Amino acid sequence: MLASSRRYVIHLLTFRGTLTPVLHSSKRNFSAFPKESRHPLFAYTDGRFLQNEEKELSLRYSPFNVTALEQVASRCLSAQRCTEFTKIGEGAFNKVFLLRFDNNKEALVRIPCPIVGNVERTTKSEVATMEYIREQWGSFDTLPKLPKVLAWNASYSNPVESPYIILEYIPGVTLGSRWRKIKGKTVRAAIDSVFAMEQALLCRPFSQYGSIYFTEDVSPELRDRPLYPPGQALVYPSDLSPKVEPPSSEYFSQKYKIGPTANFQWYRGAYADIECDRGPWPDVGSYLTSAATFQLKALDAGIGFGPPEPRSKKSDIPQLRRLLELCIRLAPLVVPDGRLSAPVLAHPDLSLGNLIVPPEGPPSIQGIIDWQFSTVEPYFQQCSLPTYVAFSEKPGGVKLGLIPTLPDNYDQMSPEEKEYMDLELRLAFRHSVYQTSCEMHKERGEAMAMTHYGPIDHLGFSCTRCIAEGPIPLRTALIRIQQNWQEFGKYCRTAAEVPCPLDFTEEEIAAHETEAQNWDKYTQYSEMLFNYLRADEMGTVDDEDYERAMSLMDDCRKEWTDYGVKGPFPIVEGGYSYHLV
Image (tube, rainbow, N blue to C red):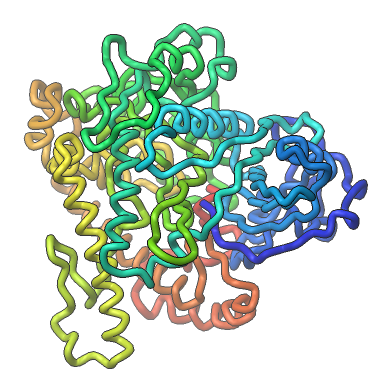
């Protein structure tokens, strides 16, 4: 969620007293700041969007009162004044600034962008989650640390005129800046450190599914609910022991509660206005039912059909309704037994950019950042391989396995191609090492060994984005469940006791397989196009690549149909954009 950014140093004397006050409301008025009046400190400056640029930029424009923020931060650091603002990072949802003070101290500030949706709820949950983890796991010397929250406010109605989080500064660089260079035992040490933190979080079940908040930030009816399941004592992983014993379960239950989910998918764009059950949920069936009902209500309200355009068409609405109603029938049945469905916390995005390591020497994990959108979800959904270590096979490339292998024609490759394949092999081995570590752990190994684990793992996500992504992903999951119903009965006791409630005919399945193959080809060629244009998954390119990409676009459009790709050209104004639909 945090990309490396151009460093943008602001001399504060040019800023103080120059800002137009921001409207004090819970939502941003996206048209309140015309393009020509946007200051680069507050604007997205880390590249150009190839489509829907004005919409993307307006949703990432995050003005705030610099003087007020300087004063709040100075008080936190016992400084007289802030001497320098530096924008050091920005991604899809936040801007990050490094502040230096006249007493040589430093701090980070995170400012969320309006695209987050329910910024207030998300900020409250992010801060509470970080504080909870620091209190529960901060006394374990072998675990990575989280930065301390020095000050925060979740409202636009404060002197800074924006929600903000002021954080302790953890020196270092992202693991991504060193990942392709490090080798040998140092890699294993970094992997083991992250794995240990994951296992620590997974060992502590909660009482409900949702997100973590301070008690005062949840509605009154949730404040008496226990944080943990009654009678369940915390059992530390065998390889962990605290330097100082953490506070008691009673302490945590008084300070923290499980509230509504902070997952971005439930608050994006117009979906934030849908009245629905966002949790907390007592069981997996309730969670899946709410996810499907959420999208049914969006269909009732006519939300989600752009522009920007989703991958669904209005002619898909009857089919989407059927799929979502099937999910509701299915929800109470596809619940893995026992510990595999326990409500547990996990980091929402363990990517290379969110792991902080020293700039030189052994790449030990100094800190884990960006806990925005953290959720408490079923164990089986929280224990897949993290993105920083996951390796995807490419046609003609390295093959995964217990021992990954080079392609058969490796010896015939050029020196440059061999160098690339050698790097791919190292990355594939890291994937295999992490997967082996997971499989050696009892519950995590059981979850990953579940036959056809994928369809139920992604069912909730596929529901919440079925209008945006079209019917194919959700239908794929449901058909796989129907085809393997007996296998699911081995892990889901309720499924073993009843016939499968799904009713896809052989003709429907055959037609779907053809559609799915066309869709796979479409996504493959779309990825190739983005790579050719040097664009990332958000459709952004570096400033210096923008003119090149735009000049190539016309030729790419002409060639698109020549490849027999069934689907619209992926880059078009008003077309699909992941964060906008």
